[in-house]
Length: 486
Image 1 (cartoon, rainbow, N blue to C red):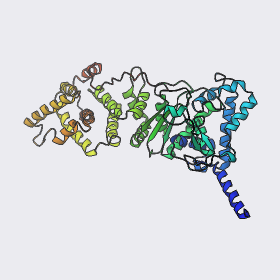
Image 2: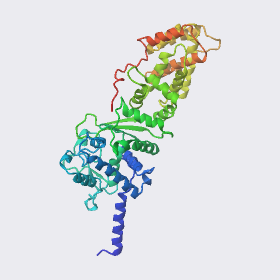
Image 3: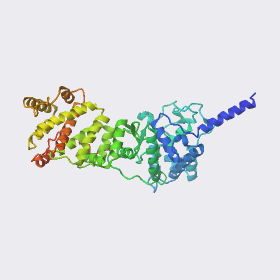
Image 4: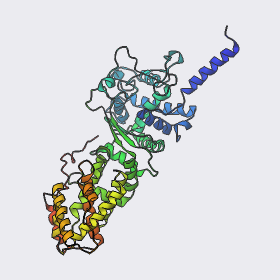
């Protein structure tokens, strides 16, 4: 026979378990975390732990209202139907967008959508733990509610006999809130994630505010250009005012039922690069200088910079040094001077080049500047720049000039032109030799500029190099102008 005390304990346990279904926790699932911060923003709070049970219920009701408002529209082409159309890439064949809607009455659609967005009765809970947070699961959920695994097979079907993911109600609601924190397109969407909770909270809250007009009001998203997901993620990073303490991940995905060859892409950005970009792109003059270095005839600079930030960060140094090396024979202007400083900070802060090695390259640059700056014309500098186009030619040039330097030093106490350590930095095949060569060239140009060296034919030679088809540092990526319109 159950005693009153045992009954009270059971009732207390059940109450605690029920209340736990109205309280969010952050898990190790990146998209759940994005959804958690989106739901937090919908609840009007700053952190998931600040969301009360009543605020949680209100935010869930708001999402249900948005789903109902979209579901009762006649079609995805109707006025204000953007969310109805876009919902298919998050919740395919759900009660709000199932093809059978056309044969159902308005009230039936409303009732089914509300039931879908309501926590299941306790007597239907499966008696399992949530796979994400360990609390009591309220049911098994598949891709109708959750963007699933990276594999197309698991994303688009559930194997026979497998009940899918056991989840608690707050985790399910976090996935329901995920679209509010994503960049929406009506098709492939994107989300920015970081393990830096403060950063993730800020950028997700901003995204929720922007998406209000698309989800609540149903306004379509404006057509975007190439690398749009990367550009928007970079813009969020640029506008963030605090230090970034963790790396950034850009998820580009779709959860459509229609098979896709590219259902999920994850592009990572490590913390040193994220912080370097945030700090430097926040300065307007540095941003303009980098954009100028990336600009191509058929493509503005920012999309290409965003592309490299997520897809090929080492390329950033190559593009910036190329731009300086191509355009600066006669004199350096302020943008070029900024780019040189950015190149050296990128080398040490992002690429991890040793400070002493970089200083050694600067010392060598002073000696090279002495050699090429000894003539009144740009002839010697031009020969040096041509040598820089191939490592073998640069090596020969340095060896030849080092011998001449030794035979006739510029000053009695000049010492060797190039040391063994410097030579090893430039031509070590197992290291970063090519990057050090690039730094050497811009350091030489910087040193000549600091000395006030102005060749009499500098302007003419600069134009000649600009027009040359043989520029070593030219960007030959034929796919740049195409971009990825997503």
